[in-house]
Length: 163
Image (tube, rainbow, N blue to C red):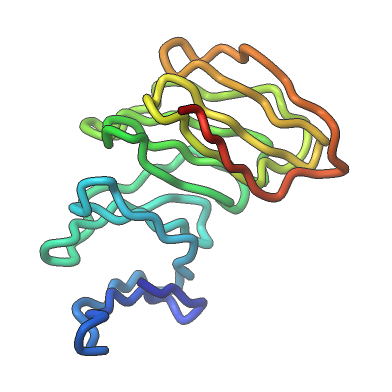
């Protein structure tokens, strides 16, 4: 999948090099694609501060997640595809119920842009990295911050190996 500031995201066949679907939203750039673990859904962040959920089978839009007040920097599915995690320049990360599209928790604690986020292998914990020099560790069960890691000037990416 590729995304562009031309208001499109394209799903490609690697075998043929042909477009499978062209996902398009007028006057809204699509970026930062993420695929569900079961390969049935795609997330794209948009330039209007939302995240769109698309069906992979037909390229149709099935949900829009709107609560951020600035660019969304990350959107991803939990390991069991039950929760969506979004992070933004608005200093918030949000956990969403994938079935209903409702917010579960706003993860408040960073004081600068949240650049990146990841889930633990079991999905019970998520991590957010920020320009505020911290990586925060959150419970996805209750939305509480359970730890803070510091040591960088700013955190631009995360990888967690919790085997």
